[in-house]
Amino acid sequence: QVQLVESGGGLVQAGGSLRLSCAASGRTFSTYAMGWFRQAPGKEREFVATIRWSGGSTSYADSVKGRFTISRDNAKNTVYLQMNSLKPEDTAVYYCAAGSGSSWHLKRLGEYDYWGQGTQVTVSS
Image (tube, rainbow, N blue to C red):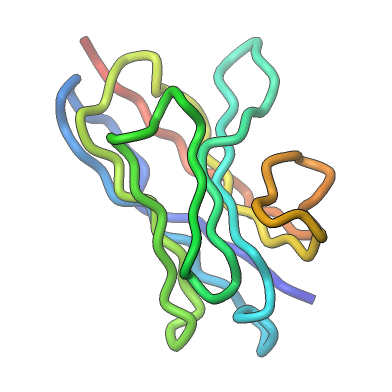
């Protein structure tokens, strides 16, 4: 069992930065791939970024590539999402997730086993 708690969301102007954190409980954190997803009002939850259990490989949605960076610290049971050059269209609730799927990079909701409660990110124009 893994419990996930996100933090770091807030209100920021376009062009600004935020860093989201996701703290995980459980001794098996380092065995899970971790991902960030987001859901804007009236839209489906979408993939943002993922990182393999070792932290050596990452993948991003095209919409955030070059602006967002996912990282993890297995010693602290924490995964991060550094978000730079934020745009109003990045406004959403951001969720972290832990997954044990077999794909090299987990990009689908169904590949994740555990989810956090979400943190709101609002980017003003």
